[in-house]
Length: 255
Image 1 (cartoon, rainbow, N blue to C red):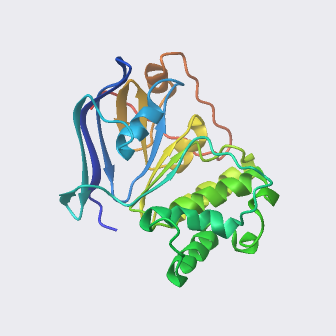
Image 2: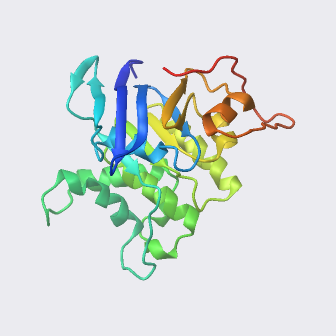
Image 3: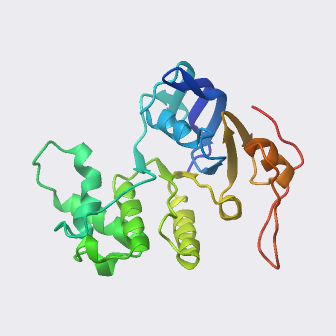
């Protein structure tokens, strides 16, 4: 995978009802990136994702997509939103949920092809869900359902996978496995992950964007408690024990 920019934001401002949510945000996502987006509640993390997805138009600045070093109109994007709920009684299988990630490629009522089903089964295999393919989605645990939604985001063969709080409903043990699976996915596409779990994110991603109206970008995931305190607007203490990986950054500023 060529290590070149696929998404660039230049001096982006975004607002809701006249209230600024992002201010002078500049950011670059590389083709091989595993970017963690962290920050306080209401700081603009989800707003930044909406701007990248094209769901929110900036009031100023530029968002540009790139493919093979040339500008393009859009990228193949897999997206897992922050909140996803299921009716446990709704009669839909795990495979059918994953296949629904391909609806945007087909007209209404179009029948899924053998190739579509192959892609769905491949995504299920990536997320270690093959044994559950024909099970009703309502029979799965919360963590398993979350992995099904990641598989649905993967089925379109994305150039960038964007996940908003993907570890929701997942216990610590299964969170670690999820991050291992995302690291495998990162070999074939960029991954952008939003999370409030600062410690877990910094142990697993390559780069960090701290968002609190402004975007503070770090080219390596090496962040001190002092820097996080500046980004979050409150005192922040980092603690690590034993062999828990932690990284330190000496410089912090706007880009």
